[in-house]
Image (cartoon, rainbow, N blue to C red; front, side, top):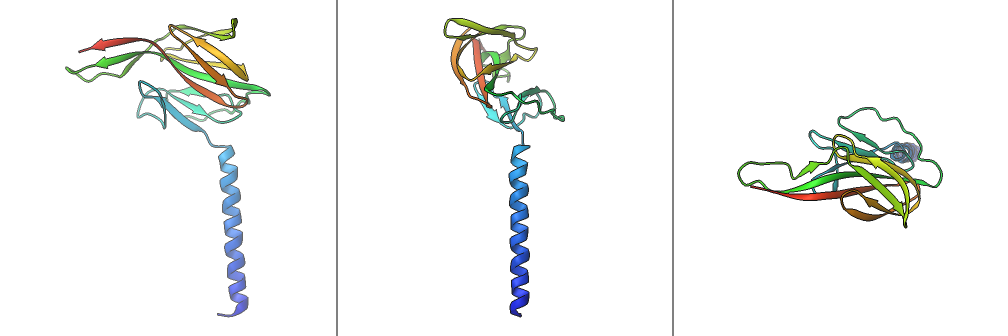
Length: 168
């Protein structure tokens, strides 16, 4: 092959790699991450059926029950979010298979900064709740209480256990 042809081929390859890298970098900004609750913690991915959370940095999270187009709404400067689930842990189930947890619908969830009540929200029918908060440290209280840190432009996933049920 001639030197000119080799130079042209190298130029085309470099151009293709640059375009691919630019497209991949742009796609990351538009990418949603999905998480679902497995009975003890949030894990990456969508469940086969059931509720899941869609997250993206700097954007208000969404709690979904099916795949759909999500409208991206900015969180706002200095703001982060908490998405959580209030649940009763279920253990046992030797006689028949059962879910590892039961959601707690319509439970009041209070969020404190120190001793000051910042906001109160209510869980939905699947036990999920959402709160938009200024970056900082908070106590999230349902039937139990945990401490979480909210970061600017980020969403924190919060499993909030409301009790434990032993089944057989």
